[in-house]
Structure formats: structure tokens, C-alpha cells
Length: 135
Image (cartoon, rainbow, N blue to C red; front, side):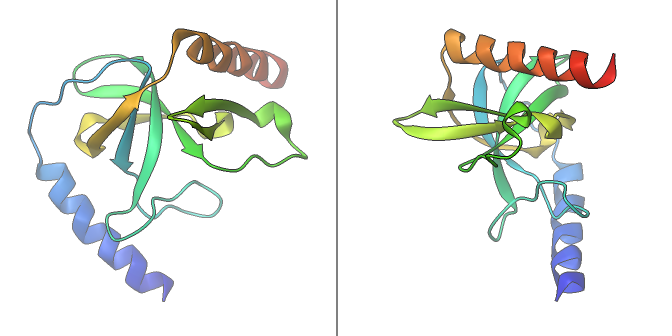
């Protein structure tokens, strides 16, 4: 079963890699991206297109950005690894430990943009996490 899922994702990944359309995006936006089927406890995309919402944290160029995957549930035993915020009337949770560099080729469609206050809260919590865990 898992092998079939990896094979399906691999076929989609080849198509994504060939996608050369120019996409305009900005920090603070939330996009559904083609996250894929990943290894172990890395966040996966869901559904036929392996989609997951991701917050664009830092744009480095027109081709790459740092993104933070989002989920709808926070693990209460590890609150320092998550940051909850309201997006479009519902709770979203940034998974701070899953920050990653992404290609814009993965961007599928924009869902919206979060407010500056929530964005700054996420950035501050990420800075605290990195400072406490790695420095």
C-alpha cells in the first residue's frame, strides 16, 4: 500500500518538476502546495494531489521560499513546537518544527493571507524555538 502511494507521488513529482510557470507570491500568504508523500514523521500532503496548506514565511527569490506547514490540530504535550492562529474564521496551527525550503513549483493555489499580528507571533515563536533548541 505505501509503495503504491510513493509511486503515485513520484509520478506527480516528475510533472511538478517540469512546471515552469511563473507564480507571484508573497510572505504571509497561505498556499495549498503539492507537499507529497514524505518519510517517517515529516508532514505529508493529503488527497489525490498530496496537498497541504503552507504559510510563506520568507521569500528568497521568485523560485524558492521558507514555508511552514499548517494543520488543524495542536499536540498539547508540545506547545512550544506549534503556533495557533485564526484564519478565515477557523483555527489553524503552524507546525514550527517542519519549516522547510520549498520550490515555487510546488505552489498550487493561494488560500489567502494572514494578518501581520499573527505573522509576527509565528515568527517570534519560531525565533524562540530555534534560540532555545539550537543555540
